[in-house]
Image (cartoon, rainbow, N blue to C red; front, side, top):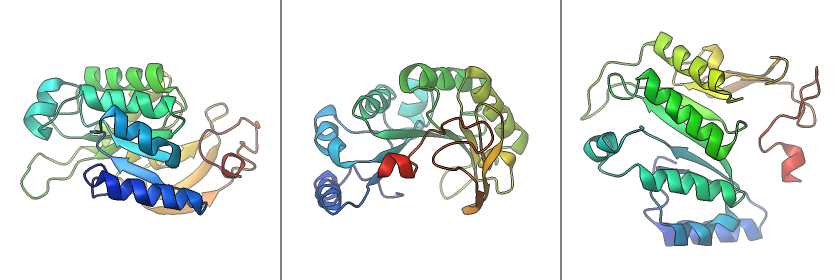
Length: 212
């Protein structure tokens, strides 16, 4: 993470393959710019992936990211079909990626193409280095999370906002608080055998039942 693994694909592939041979799990944190052939090659050795879906227009990707939207969407679809556990992260950049229509369309894509169980992480933006835009207002982050839930996604999170309720995992059926987080700390986790202890709904993800 924080160093794009697809840039040094051969090295990442060798690590993932040898890790799998030794029952060590591999997770890719990536911007999603990878061609179908190398993704197909590495997929059997990848357990999970968190993919940045940075925006929802070709103009944004070209002008801000220096890339294209379509390959990222293709990567997400291919990862899902390959059996990789997929999570999506969108950095909510003030004035660029905070339009409710765009957010709703991103949520709908995740729902339709990846499934309602796919976690969507909506991260707060802070100005840094060469790019300035005001920090994302917390209320906009909460509104974005509500949009994701309204669209039918089961697990929508607010990132870079320690103490916000959007950091936590709730049962999608009964609303029970299951995993309480503060920043990067897990305060408590009451999921039992991959299920909600109250209503016994199975909680999606890579819990112990999935990994054994």
